[in-house]
Image (cartoon, rainbow, N blue to C red; front, side):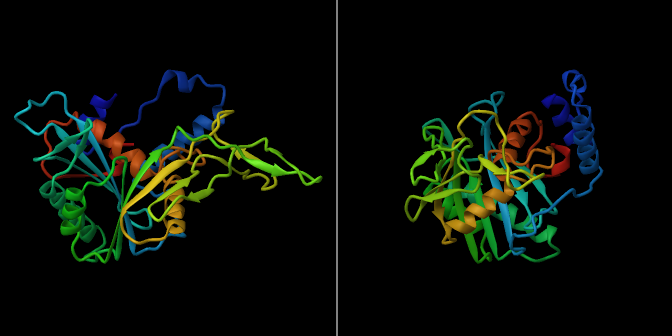
Length: 303
């Protein structure tokens, strides 16, 4: 269905696929709720926003995809940015092909020129979407480290913005922690639920572990716990700061908030912040588009 979405995106058409296995589910109410959400969003409406965020902060996710159909003489790396305003409004996707990409350990990185162009286009999009005002702070998420070339180029392109945080975010599958509870006799035992969602362990001034996936208070009764994901032990996110001075408690709250910004799902949260989750997904669809240049699309076309 990615081919259909890619075709419709270039023509400004929203699409919604209904799978037979989904319609045959016994959870009829769940199907109706999710369809209602999808139709509501694709009618250009806003289902929810994050009230606790600083309205002068904007968020950017970077994802990359190899274009297998491109020749080596062309740039085969597709850069994709998923841009959020601080209140969740004016979200846009921007697609472009990198002109001078760098491959390290099979991962694509931007050159200084590519990073500067990306920063400039993002800065312009922020400016246009907010009526001629730049945010005071921009937070950039991606799943690979920020090279020196990327840091220098992005800072050049985002000139005029006071604070820029560049954050690497990945699931740390090698670490599995269990939650411990205290007993009345003063001893400890393993809890029946995983580590609580929102738990964070700061490792040093640049690294932290954050549990986006974990147990949370049940909506029906806060005394009970809810865990999305069955019996598996959740893995934390490894968060590495490559540039910026924002404290980890603020970075953690933002990542937790962005995990609830998937307007294509009624789940309590996603395992990754929407900046990461969506930008990589959009990069995959973007690899099917025939024309790139400086393209900017309404986010609803992709979900």
